[in-house]
Length: 228
Ligand code: SF4
Image 1 (cartoon, rainbow, N blue to C red):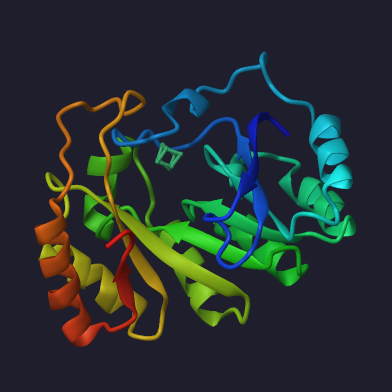
Image 2 (image 1 turned 45 degrees about the vertical axis):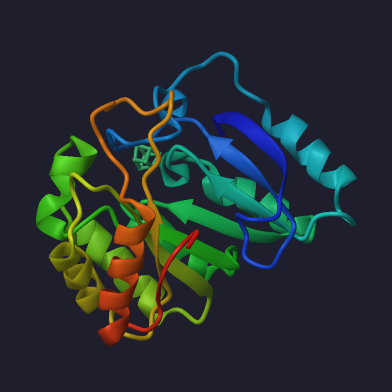
């Protein structure tokens, strides 16, 4: 496992649970709005060893409920399944954050009861993906991951970081239509920061977010704009 960092406590990233976050190194996308751009290049140095993380988790067994595995993109790590098995053996709930490209590994993890919560990013409409991730992609992998999550009894959510220059109501409605009315779907406003590579990108204003929520909720009541 290439582990770039650990946040020792979060009350926000695993719904209803106290957790820590493990940030894996490397990603197969190159989103211009990425807040974790320092995690994207696959580096060999400055990494945290797996033993160090497991030792920390052993010490926190009676304090934390869960572990969030985030990134980067965790599913590009070859030994992710073994690593999660070790965390589950310590009795933790595990939440996986993923961009949904590795539907085969996602299925394996779900089938082996290694995940308790999955949060999957939907970058935009399928024909808009390459515009955002700046890479070629076969979106069938994304569609297969969505299907897997829609069919699993394991708790999950879909989410999109919405950016004023990229997303509009039509695109958001298009994604809602694909997900269906029953799914938990969160929209989170983009925030410009020192870590974001594309400095031209803009956030929606609070008023615009309120309007988006109102319009979307007419047909999709389960869609929520985070932070309103
Ligand atoms: S998928 Fe996530 S981690 Fe990877 S580049 Fe995009 S925003 Fe960053």
